[in-house]
Image (cartoon, rainbow, N blue to C red; front, side, top):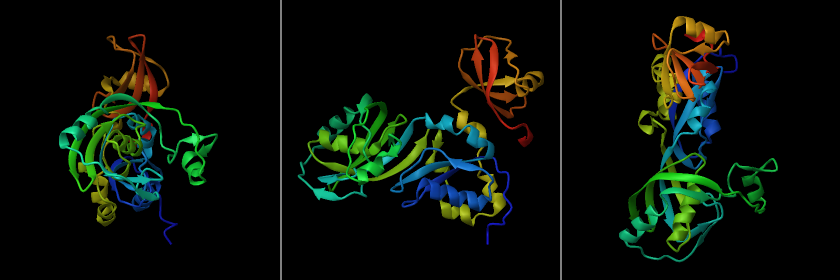
Length: 302
């Protein structure tokens, strides 16, 4: 049963509040099935132990989902002090260790020292690959390999609470930042062991958990109501400056021809719209006035 359902052309973006214990792919499969969508993908994987904002891209939106991956992300995280975890999070084997009592002042000062650009070593328990093998597979076999440090940027780090040896923080960071590694590093800076107890993602770029739906809610909505929650595809690329194009310019781009613009633009990527504000895709300006298509929407969906 269920396999013979007609697959539908669905286009747009749906924000999900991923529940605990679901992998990002499980959440995606469920949503794809509920919508009977032909094509869907998620952007910005969350571990099964993490909850929160997971954008699901349908149809044409999948073409533009990678542009969201470069956006800053915000998380609310709890760090359990006085314990060491074999994986850096609540899934690992836990060993109790010493506790040092902290004043709020010291805690805030140490947290502030993590702001800005720094180098971070990705954890062994991550999906990064070493010679084609995901690191977490090697880690499970007890193999440790050297990982390259990466530059990360933490633009905000707020203390939300500190009780019962658990620090609760809100952190806004660049892509590629591992909160699990950050949790361990913060504990180390405080002179203790610690691990990431729980993690919830609340923002990616301009997308917010406040607009996200739980899986149950999506399941219980009628199909019309469900569609009403789909967000327009251009939200994925709203960090690019917008250019409106005339009908003849639009036609040229669709034929694969570059377009001359009437004034100079910085050589970068732009989001392209018709004069009636219909989203067309992305283009790149070359030499100031020449616009070439980078990625366009399929013409038959408008």
